[in-house]
Length: 199
Image 1: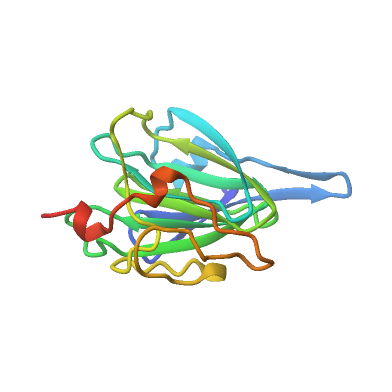
Image 2 (image 1 turned 90 degrees about the vertical axis):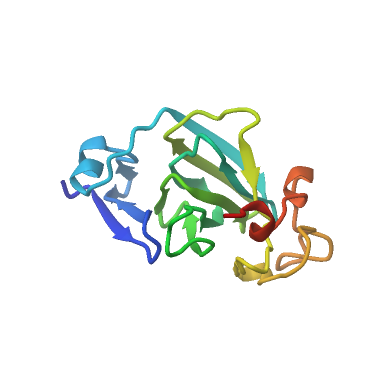
């Protein structure tokens, strides 16, 4: 072991993982995933797919989840900077509806593991961000759910754009420097947690 440092987050099921980075004047090398090291730290995930996306500054993706086929996600940024957020949606969890966020950058090389049962989203803080993530289940069309990024019941503080209440509209919200907040049509239409989950 010794190749990774694992930090448990305040919400059970969330972990920040820092790989060992070996650098010199030529550049650096690191293992971005090692199953043995993960298992020795108590993380026994089985990944089935790798994904990658590119987004421009001000893009907010989320908050997404799968209903019947939940995915665990190991996320990281290979270019740029994002604020990454997970929201606990596990029915019997004492932290249901609570959120946790972490800044992921190409410089800090942190990874964020989000167990099954969470909604996930991120806000791009740099001019461009390239985002990579491993998942523990395949994407199932028709199974996707979502939550409003600014649901007052969840109360996410997105940092540079702050904490907003109301409907999932990006109108009038700007990034430092004047860039507009950018949401997909789908992400503008998600409801809040109270309307989405009734137990």
